[in-house]
Length: 103
Image 1 (cartoon, rainbow, N blue to C red):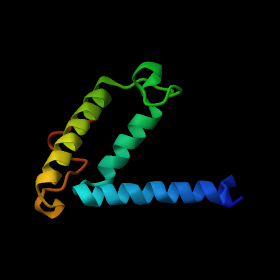
Image 2 (cartoon, rainbow, N blue to C red):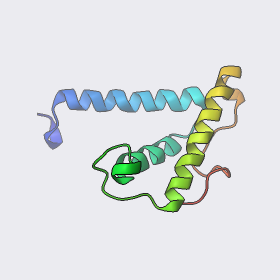
Image 3 (cartoon, rainbow, N blue to C red):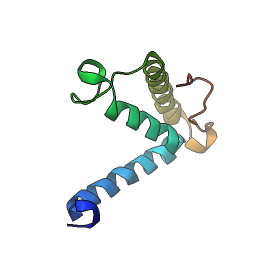
Image 4 (cartoon, rainbow, N blue to C red):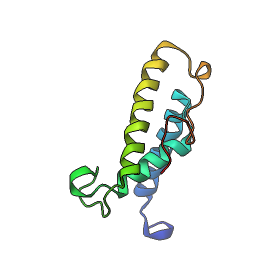
């Protein structure tokens, strides 16, 4: 076991997961902070009906739901934009993007 009670396999999987996030952020020119916010909201909230995980402990607030839908729309649009152009030609999607509501 490595520090923190995690096996080497768990640590390697976590590193691969982080590398994939970095690659996705770079490929689509999206702020890592935006992706992290989406990951945190979708993995820890939503309850049994809206959450990504059945055991999510807290329901989404209306603002959080609105933010998730807006972020998903931006990401979907970005995939299409990226297919048409290089990432460095696209404006960087940031956590504070005006299209995202405040949460």
